[in-house]
Length: 433
Image 1 (cartoon, helix red, strand yellow):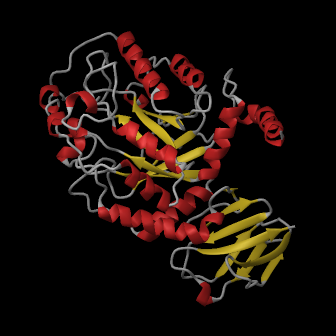
Image 2 (tube, one colour; image 1 turned 45 degrees about the horizontal axis):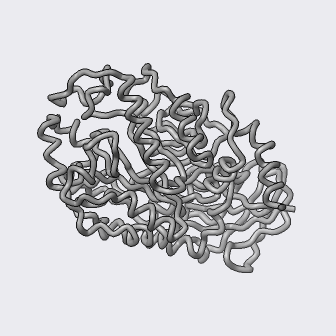
Image 3 (cartoon, rainbow, N blue to C red; image 1 turned 90 degrees about the vertical axis):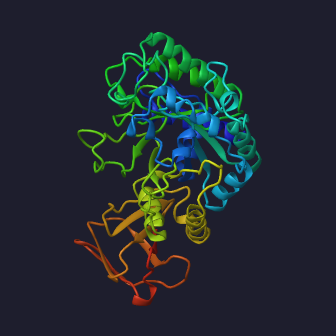
């Protein structure tokens, strides 16, 4: 009874913050948004027939592989080492709460069984199994939510026409009718939302390929919410959120930053739940030559920074063509999980704290507790300008060691014992009055 009343209140209060135009999210959708905001950490998986070539998920365009040649790849795709339960257990051990996997990427190949096309893992590969079905069952068993990445652009289908700005060097592409392509996407999205149980969300990508196209978002978003009202919709279009979307995503950038040149300016930050996606090395799909593996410190600090900006982190791995995830990636995820076992309460269920983030620090907050994450292990004196909150106490997180502090009109100053400086993150717990 109390939960029902709470949901009604959340729905009533959430319309102002969460609505876009005439889209009114349901109570179950608002509950899912709150869960998503609290989850803070998810696993991104880019996996498809492109993994065979070991040159990332854009290899079809990168090498200008013709349609006929690329369509030979499924014959070689037989991931007999794939184990859905192992993947889900790995994500769970890393402290991740959800998984987002590529159901169909820009090459047009579907990693699930579909009646809308025969260009699928079930119909075209010797493996002949629906990996998304297996993953959905493993996720349900372990309490991990499953999201589906779905590419809007397609380098294979003729009805993706007029063509966009990518894939122009791919030979064998013909002309077709755009309305046919929209109907194809609707059919596949219906399959994804009716054949795999409760879905956490749909993660769209590719809008940027044809910025002036009519993607029929009003129809597509309504279709999704009608089939599963709680299903969250996000779109990697690098613009302000559009009507019908439920969370806002930022690719390889913290909210408000513009370091990747995906857009002409930093994306407008809305009031929806936020998610930053980043790679564990330098590639999304499996890349045999990628040596840009991020360190334990870099990965954990990225998670901390994302939380400090009020955002989730969706951290990507690109499985190998045999279905295994690179051991180095598995090790990195387990290291993050070990850190979260000790420090997770300063991340999960928090919102961005009152201390503005910079390169040395971010803050998260839960109730009247502010967690100051000090990322500089060289300085033990911290000054927070214009800190006007009333303080009850300050101590090192995970201990009873109280810290002396000075608060005046200029701000808050505190001194850390040099022995307390952590090479990754020194956490100060500030209890407010």
